[in-house]
Structures are given as structure tokens and as C-alpha cells.
Amino acid sequence: MLNTIKKVKKSWSIMLGLSIYILLVSSAHATWIPLTDSYSISSMPIGGLEVDELLFSDFEVTGLAYGGVLEPTADSILIQGGQDNETGKPGIRFLLLWDAGSNQLINAAINFKVSAAYEHCCIKDATLMLKAADITGTGLVGATENIYDADFLGNSLASLATSYQTDDFGSFLTDGSDLSINGVPTPTKEIWVRTGITIQGGTNGSANLYEVSMLYGHIPEPATVLLLFFGSFSLLRIRRR
Image (cartoon, rainbow, N blue to C red):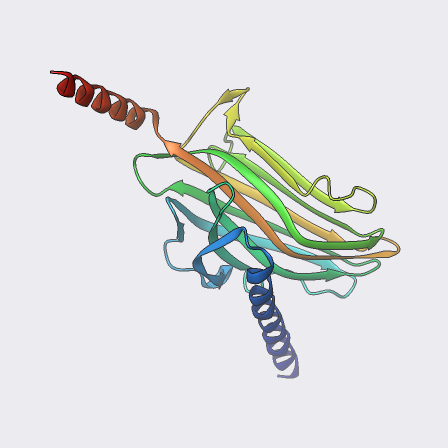
């Protein structure tokens, strides 16, 4: 009974902290335009989260922690759909409240599927960003994103990596790539994403991470582009008569 009460108190502390952070980060990052409410991954809408013309679904979370910090779970990670107003690309952000001191480590794997919500749409590129991260001493924050065209034994479409540590001056906070197979651009209607997020204090430091964002550019599929082209061409011919 006592252990249950302690777990409930920890869960409430996490959710309260994340709620306060959402209010702060919404005003701090003016480039993010929220398009959905924020949900814990475990309480997302049935069927997934629709953002612009993309659908995010099939989330799986596994986590581990060392040194006395809480293990990340689907209950403690918040997700929100939105859009970057500089690029216009839609995506999601994971809202976290992770702090690691010396000899502490937090690691999470978050896997999910992204689908074009409409027939005319294809996903063409991906961008991974670390936001609201801080480190001291030997602290390290890192995130990776590996994208495939199938859930199992799929072709690799992109491999992204970001990190933040002492003396790198924030040079690796963003990574992006077109989706491609053997260097050939490969826009596709569905992708499977495997994400790894790690923070650790090392032997003598600290690390904090509060947000990881993922954006996905999309375009009309080639058949739709051809239809639009021929439609426009036909209209021009009609006007000239």
C-alpha cells in the first residue's frame, strides 16, 4: 500500500512539472505552432495523433534509468502535434522533464509509425531537434532517429543524430535528411521511426532535457503532381482558344 502511494505521488509530480513546462515552453519557443493538445503517450487518442496531413500512431516506449532517477515510461512522456512556422513542416514534440546528475543516466527508446493521412500526400524528409537542453561538466544529451520503409527488415530511409556536450557550442542540436534509398530520393506514404534519447551526468556533471522535436516534410505524390500539371495545361489550352 505504501509503495502504491509513493508511485502515485511520483506520477503526480511528473505530470505537474510537465504541465508547468508546457506553459513556459509555449511562450519561449515562438517557432512552434501547437496543432493538437498535449497527451501522455499512454493516453493518446485511439487511432493515433493527426497533425496537418500526417498521422502518428503505433507508439512503443521502453526505458531504463540508473543512479536513482525515475525510469521513463509512456505515462511520463508527453507528446504534442504542431508545426514549425519557419519551415511550415508538421511534426511532433516529446515534452520531457529529465534531469541527471553525476553517475546518473536516463535512456528511452520511442518507436512509432508516421503515415500520410490523405491519398495525395507523400513524406519526403525528416528533421530532428534537441530543444531546451542544458549540460555541465561531463554531462551529455543525445537523440537519434532511424527511419525505415517497413516495420521489420525494412530499407533504411534516413539516420539522424543530435547531441549536446561541453565545448561543442550547440553545433549538433539539429540534424535533417531527405528520405532516400542508396542515395535515391524516396518519398513514401508510411515510415517507421525508431528514436533513442539519452541524458547522463557522467563522472562529474549534470544534464537536463525538456524537449525533442521531429518534423516531416511532405509533398503531393508523383501521380497527383502529373494530374495537376495536365489539368493546368488543359486549362491553358482552353483559354487560348
